[in-house]
Image (cartoon, rainbow, N blue to C red; front, side, top):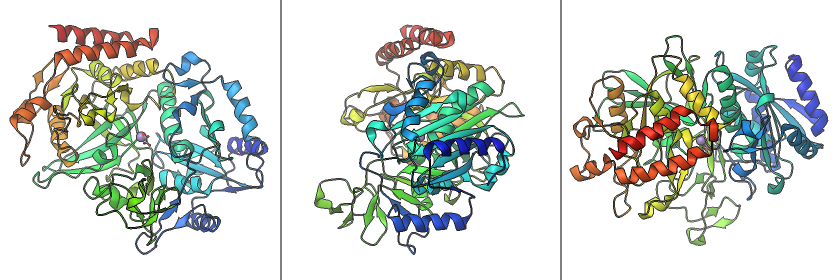
Length: 583
Ligand code: OXD
Ligand code: MN
């Protein structure tokens, strides 16, 4: 237990509010974690899986009503609604503390309150942040011990400083009508109640490392982004780093762990992170990125030896599986795993299941929580206290027709515009129609902890801090033909696009200038061994001016939401785009 007086007095204050029967400080030792695992198996909260096939692995089910992040119940309690901006729910901080204070009052009566000191970022890095999470859930403790660096190391990193994020969580009765995830950026505080689902309760992740950190980054001159970070090694043995933002369900974890096709010899991808990047200007003027997390909280369904063997291998030990399917041999399964569905077992709701049951065995948002260090392609720089230097930033979305396979921005501000206008279509796109467009700037719509207009300004300001900026690109793996079929193979073949991106960064290849940005010359994409026709390639690299003029209307409507908080540079980028398209 720490002797930091700021931590001690806050813990005492919260204890007086939630009134637990006792308090346990998490020291991060294997002995303590093992005794908590024992306890949770005895109470039925967790099930120990077959320890020969899946050593150190556990199974957990959440309540049926508590299986995903709840954006409509997630609030940014900034000083004013204006500060939270048009893309966030807002509540006055005083009103929010009062409302939740009543719910938290006595919420841990008869229970244990666990105190989890944790680090977001690498131990010993000046860029890391410390949080303390108070929770009544052993499941939360055990997940936090995988996703973050917990215990005494965090207390040491904090020292006697008052600079830590105060995270309070209680499962209470998981009542969805009283479920609230509230952020108080000015107080560096997060309160979450009535949920036990990861994204709402592992408060280091989306709540701290994105919402609170984006606010701190704006204040302190750095960026917290919803981005994977990967290192790509070429046959000469050089490794270059790329950070990439995609909305949920666009294959971020798959890209972060990509395995190049065998025919492209000498290339290898190293994973630094699959979800979050903290980015700042390094001593050398380049932008350096660090993954603040220590584990992967990945979506299980669809993860297979075909789509992502590295992710699958990562989950073979020391992993917590949530809401997946429990097989009769006490191992796990989910839809989209290799091989046939099991003949029988127990579904995520706890009911007996067979392939004829007519319902899914695993919840579509069922998850694995696995230590990043176990990933076969984890980067040797994963524990670097400085992070890794970025050559490129990539934005992406799921667009049936609009966006070509890849294009490069003309400059930083145009790249910020590309990120600010990112969008994905609903999967109607797969059925051949252009689906409903959801704008999701930098994939941060659910995660920006302040007014997104100011966030755009912060991106523009970062561009003035150095002349060694990474280049900015946009990719789209989801282009479809007239029959609604995907025309780019995706997965491992995406490395062909990453290679072009890095060739552009190294100034090795020329490009075609179009109204929307620089596109590859066909001959500069290495398509060795890929069966793709010239017509398909033309389609992948086509820019339909009519479709894009339509797109500018949607962008204009979206930008209008921000009123005078929209940076004039972005309004100018839109006008420039329209002018180029009309030429
Ligand atoms: C996630 C998400 O869970 O983006 O990472 O929803
Ligand atoms: Mn995410």
